[in-house]
Length: 418
Figure 1 (tube, helix red, strand yellow):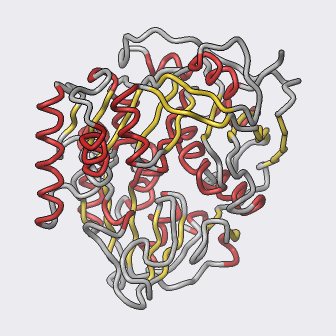
Figure 2 (cartoon, helix red, strand yellow):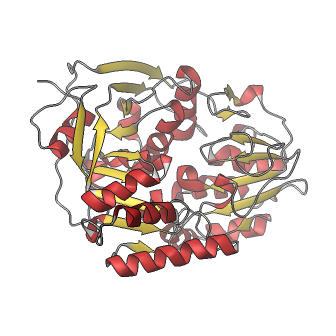
Figure 3 (cartoon, rainbow, N blue to C red):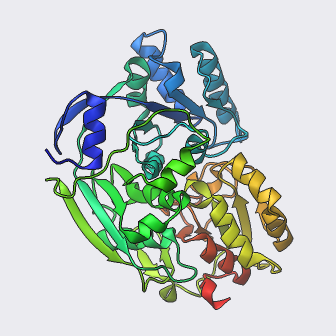
């Protein structure tokens, strides 16, 4: 039976030779991640089950990234709860306030390899499909079941394969590609489907760029994002992980496979406008919109490539007096590399604020919130009303290059104009 990558991974995890879309399977979990914001409820629910020990402490990863360092007494209490839990359960894969955003740190630290089933109490866990894993977000109470049993049921999803072709123009990036896809099919266009990204353009992308696209699969309703592993995948994993893995590839004649073609050769920078991620417009239709804050960071675009492209534009220039800019590297590893390359000096010289690796204003629960009537231009993944602070504010989404150019002008700006 021909199967998609998603079907093959779930079949393996369920101990079956084959599965089909729509089938319910009980899958063995390879990696289970929770963080400081959603972890306490997972722990509370786990304790109610009455099981004393987690199924496998080596397969559980606990991250602190959403409210770090603690910005309230409640956040501090959550941190204490999780520190006690990892100590009691003997969980060695624990990353405290210093390490960075979960979706960046997990692959960096070698926790993700192809063919695995990865779950996390965060909707953007789908990021890890960039390495060929079936990775998806789950609820905190579902995570309690995983803690106790190491298993979770799934409905096997259908797959949409996005065949992306064409050479990207200067200052057009993976973020623009995925925003264009979301704008085309809508926020519910891939509901509960595996979003597989392929084609010659995807093949030429770095692992970092592939993470950008898989990260935003959830914004079109997807269950997971996936990219077929190749040599770039293997090179990324080498030196990071010693785990063995099996590469799964989609059979092009799989019954549940749907294909969509996107030629991006004429694509211009894209911007998602308030208050929906699928409200996407070419930058030419948004240019000139006044902004109060620029946020460069998050699990979508806080990687080294993003910092480099932004620093290249900001070098020798100043952030507009009418705008504040926050730069938040996605991990400590990225922070250190950016420091070694002089990127952080460029940001500080330009007038930007460089913050510790964390989620920052992305979730509207930590530093850098916007006030009533203010406008944020963000490289993150969501622009829902109230997402980054006041429900009376507005959030636009863009690439790192657009963010940097806009910070200089104090208004949405096409980086090609600079």
